[in-house]
Image 1 (cartoon, chains in turn cyan, blue, brown, orange):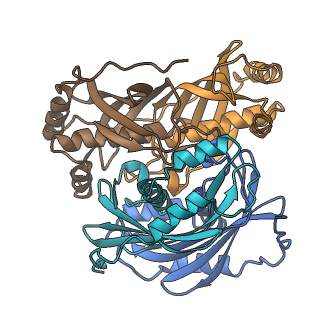
Image 2 (cartoon, helix red, strand yellow):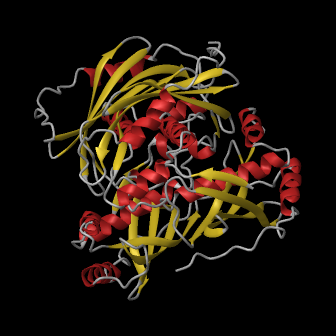
Image 3 (cartoon, chains in turn yellow, blue, purple, red):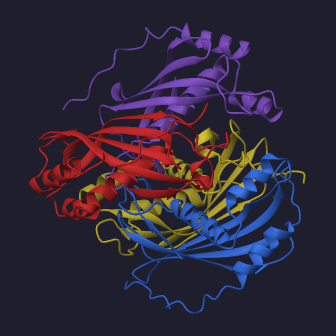
Length: 149
Length: 149
Length: 149
Length: 149
């Protein structure tokens, strides 16, 4: 679980958070999940620079918006892995404010070779990290409440 | 059809366009489509300031990535409306580079009252504009070629 | 003092944080400073919606870069007010990583009427908040060390 | 001279373009200037990938804001080089809307080795490109008119 404070840079002229910015917040939350199981994104970058790299890139991403967020809102981000196999993983990040659902971001990540950009199998330690996140307890969290229309 | 030149601000440390930035490009293309049928987004903003406003906000958005884009790439954006009703519209923006598919952005837009943020019916002239875009000929364009893996 | 974790969205194809993104981080730090003295930006937004609003907008901003930052870096942000008067304030945000200077962001903020966009005097409570930040002790912090070339 | 259409992604909850986004627009204009003299940024990226790279990075950047810009505004960007030497160059981008000055972005670019990130002399063809831009006629353009307060 991470928190994120909305700043003006996140918002648009409609006065609410711009839809694409939620994907950035979800990236932060996925990075935090990987860091929490011992594999910070900096380690993946370090290996890539040494020519031995695997990267996780977004193949498909979907955001579903339930309620708008505003400047200065403190959002809570929770990330879980829904499914994973030898080459792909499906992640869900849920953003809430005071237990009210703001939006859900689902992404399918594919593993690529950092030099060639071609798909490859997920390396062992990254696979292990993904497995650890996938088995973390998420059911304990409070059920989300939809904002009143 | 619009073109968009990728700048460094669009890219990330993996050397390719950051996934969330494609949603911004799709917004540009939808705005251009509305402008081309006589309803620029500035007109919607002007009305909203006068308290008589309707806005189109993204309720759900999905990006599917076929091939990466790089700094300085010249992308071609084509937007079409797949479906629409009294309150919602479904838009697709396709981004290509030299007729190779880069990604597809699908969004479902809902109409809201600009003051209250509550859902409302699409006002007549906006509905008419959406209808015009929905009936534009899109079949004439060249079939997209998937990048070689 | 705030911390900020660099994500891929902050970086560009050169592998480092994109220069414009530091201005967003500085905004976060200024917001946090205002919040710490009892005037969160949400309060300014709330008043603006009620037609009684004053906003602080950037009139001039300068970033000076000392050393690059990379994905996953944990940056420390410190904001101070260098000077202020009835209508303007000059803020400095210093970003460091492990006490190495990354960059300095200086902005001159002007107070505007949120409805008309015209310059106005800073309202009393905002002026008081700015005064509190301006007198906070900043000398206690460790002297910054420039990165080895 | 380039044009740029403001989209909602460029704006913030104050209803105007967010200050940091102007730095992105200025980057577009500098890229266009380099492309116009035969050195697109993609060429610099290509060389960097081959280990023979020089990059231009922002050492210092200043934005001065004269008048706000709004969603759907069509901005005109003009970039000139004020000064340059063997390792550095000073660029100015002026953004206008209907000949009214919106803002001026000044950046000092330093040349770095793309592998090590260390400062280096500007390679010959890049130096030549910078020289060409620096001598382009800019005086012919209409004098800028400041927005009425």
